[in-house]
Amino acid sequence: MNILVTGGLGYIGSHLVSKLIDKKFSIFIIDNLNNSKRSTYKILKKINPNIKGFKKIDLKNKKKLLNYFKKKKIDIVIHMAGLKSVSESYSNVKKYYNNNILGFVNLIETMQKSKIQKLIFSSSASVYAPKISSAIKEDDQLQINSIYGFTKKTIEDIIFLKSKSLRLNYIILRYFNPAGCHQNGLLGENPKGTPNNLYPYIGDIIKKIRKYLKVYGNDYKTKDGTGARDYIHIDDLVDTHLKSLQRLFKYKNIQEVFNVGCGKSITVKAVINSFKKFCNFKIKFKYYPRRYGDLDKIYTNNNKAKKILQWRPEKNLKDIALSTFKYYNK
Image (cartoon, rainbow, N blue to C red; front, side, top):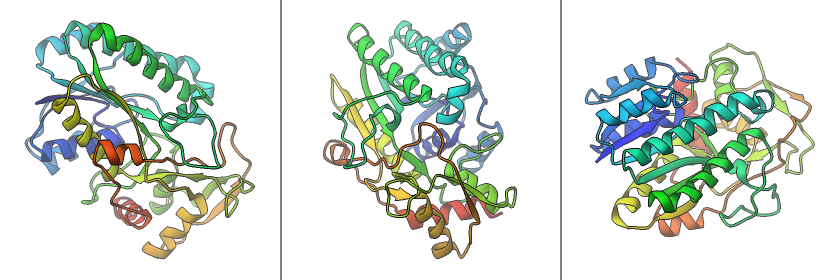
């Protein structure tokens, strides 16, 4: 089975590629390196020397993309490429529109010309309407709360609308908050510039690049006043892709959506305390005003993935803290 992973050198993509190679899949990687590093490919080769097939391609370059597809025999595309910061998306609307939406349009049209009819898309919990009273299910109300969420929802709509004409079999995975690092300490989340996500920001504190953590808001409707999210270990998240691959190749006429999260809401303070408890590392922090668009609490009901994909998260907050500390404490 030949699998193309777009964004395969990013945080989630690189962990997925590593796991797929371990499972003896044939992998092709394309990445524009906007928020990833070529050195990640060297790390992947160190983990598994059998890896091959990275090409620097920007999905906005349709001609280059089409030429690449003509040279490869691809059975399925796992689309992970895309800009992903909620806060950044407000000030860079055109950038997010061009990169995420137009880039995907080029990809799906190239898939159509190449007669590729299987797709796994990395979507996001940002497509849901705010809901703090209970866990979010796949059939709950959708509502755009950010430019980033708009791009994810638009791509989902394109997939749905194109599925009939393409005879497309697809699985959409709506990620909640991926966290943690590879067990060997070689792969982790290593964004360019100032991190937008909590764990890589803590990573900068571990590396002594920053002195303290900025905690945005302490008046949320949570048990300690800080915002709560559904943090899922990267290994558990990667496993949903393996289960999705099995399903797409075992059955026909698959058009499904699954939430991917641990099923619990975890506050920022709980994350901070986990490093003290499990790693004996104290994180200094300061409170700042809430950021526009941030929700009090969001977490998933993952029963659908458990039932249909036969998947369940195996790791917890302790595993996330320990693997994160191991990666950044070098």
